[in-house]
Image (cartoon, rainbow, N blue to C red):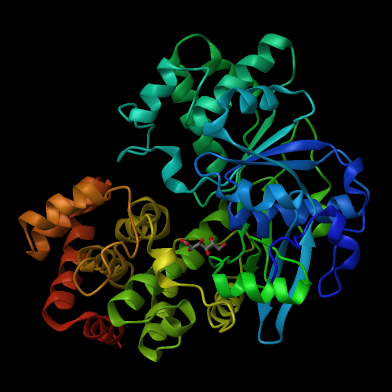
Length: 490
Ligand code: CS2
């Protein structure tokens, strides 16, 4: 494919292999700034917004912002922000060109440009998918005040690097100008994500001094939300295939599954697109949906990923297709499901059977290494929370804790049976120190849990179960550990 024959507004008329925006993009103004314009956002929120624009909304275009790398802007900038989503199933790929991304910015290139855009009254919502680690939580869950980027932002408020530096800087400007604050919508997989980001933002504002912390507390809305769509990383082959089908080059299409879900707390004082017309569930309390998704979908994903890596499976469908791992996941679900509220109308049986179908989608090729990233940031809400709740009720936690043991083992296998940089974790430096001094399972679990903040209340029970599994993994291998766990109480 000739890369000069590029996707863009001027090319839309000649695209036959995909649906394209039917609205006049030049009439759209920007109302949302999205921080963290990765593949997930482009396959999820940007599609819902595209639906709204297609139905006549005019002032909810998206400014896509990268907080670190220029890659997305470099790919989509020359395409007028257009890109393709490929919805993959057994029936092949359904292609759709998305038009909701009106412009792109790279924060570190010009922090002032982003701050002033965020202060613009036309912007009424700031949404975020920056991954768990960008919230800079310390092991106790509070803002890591000692983090170098936090210190930088406090010292350089005009040139921030963190999400909190940008949010508070822009909110302060809006307040000074008499402009209503934007709504902050965190779309990352954190528990009570709105409340969590509010708390961290207030902690940052308190560190920075002044009275912005109380303004954030009293005047800024942080609705919680549950987001769900599986989005494997795009490969060069995907890029080629999609470009061939379009007849023009798309530098960065996004691969995804047919399923998509978005549950959002209704709390948007400065307005919002009419998302509910396009399948978004607006609710008063997102908590039960969030917990169900984090503990059943994401918890199982992490288990499938680490056990898959240890037993040689490159993708979720391969790992989940192993009958032993499959029965382990069923047991994991049975454990986690008891921690969910029973009075919120959740149907965990239907939910997990839909998950089983999604995880089995062979067309997705969702890599286990992709999910393995950042386990220290993910396991608390995916696995440890359920284990703690069950332990408090005196219930077994064996399946849950096998995931924690598999995480430790997979981290340690990097540079051994797994490629050194197969996945990364913000705790890597600390993990390397621990792995250098001991390979004794009990000591390993104690040291890693302390470093990751998994200990705390009920910690001894969690550690004992994880150490037992880690011993089996070391002595007999991960497949035997899964077998032993599945046979417990059978
Ligand atoms: C995955 C999630 O990479 C991961 O950790 O578990 O990205 C998962 O695919 C999404 O949350 C699905 O909505």
